[in-house]
Length: 131
Image 1 (cartoon, rainbow, N blue to C red):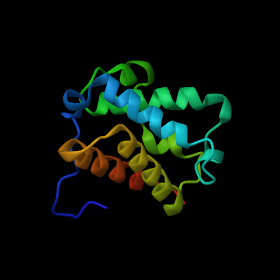
Image 2: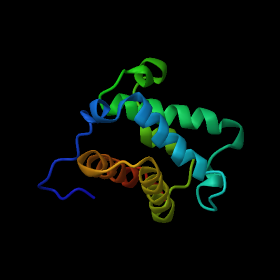
Image 3: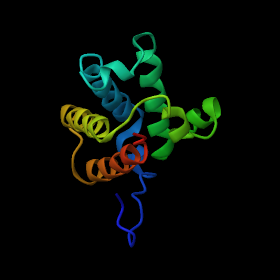
Image 4: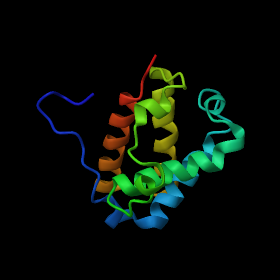
C-alpha cells in the first residue's frame, strides 16, 4: 500500500526507457509463466492467453507513456471492474508479482526503470485484490 503522505509511482516516462520492444519482451516473459502456474493458470482462459497478453502489453505501453492504443481499443481501463470476475486474493496478487519479477529478471530490466515499474505494478496488483 502507498503510505498516506506519499505519491503513487508515476510510470509515464518508462516508455521512453523501454520502448515497444522492451514491453513486448517483458509481457511475453510473464505470460510464458502463466499457463503452468498453479495459482494464476486457472484464472486465465486458455483460449484467450494471447488476448490477455496483448491487453496487458497495450495497457502498460499506454500507462507508461506510449501510444494510446489500449484506450483507443478499450476505453478507460476500469481495472477493478474488468478483474471482478476473477478471485484475486493476497496469494494471487503476490504470485502475479513473483511471476512479473521473474519476467523482469529474464529480460534484464534493472535500475530506476525496474524500480519504478515494480512499484507501479505492486500498487495496481494490490488495488485489484477483491477477496
